[in-house]
Length: 137
Length: 120
Image (cartoon, rainbow over all chains, first blue to last red):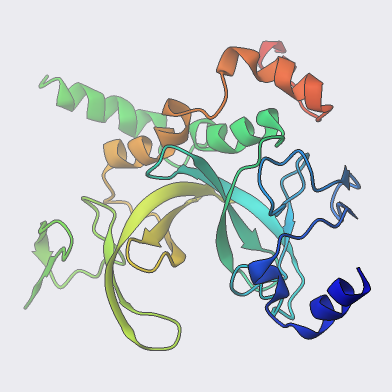
């Protein structure tokens, strides 16, 4: 284990090749997060509030000096039908896409997906007019 | 006098000299240069909608070649059916059974429920 710790310290790209199994406390909501149960070796965000921390520039390199909190701003469906969360850094605005984990909060995920439908960015009157003209009246 | 022609779908603008930051028809664009300045040439495809705090929409685009993401603000001319389709994509392919959503949330001990809808 000692040798492993040394490797971790000296190899700059250690987490590109090895899974990270550390437990941590979410800095946003205080949720205690353990690494198993995610269905993947790479725990990226808090399963309760889905917030992430900006530590990587490329996956696993731990090279970012920003360390800002990353808010989930959207979800999208990848070509294989899997969902991924889009995170945006509060400080520098970097975007990153991450697979959802098996134990992510389903209510919170669905809330992000539902957000566009409650918004008034496309006014209802314009939609009404469009539907009427689509019907050819 | 040049008209905007979409490099992704071939849509041609009706008005001359109008600037678009993405095609209003297919919401796509061409990824010309990556962060280091090397040409990429992939297509920025719309993958999701970001609803900002002031209730304006940004389209999140992703390059099909290199996977880089960016956001562009929604334009007035944008195709509403295409926008709705992009926004509804996750709802059409849920990763868990929707009728079990509350049960699963309770199981993991997570916060949030759907009670707010039934309150007036």
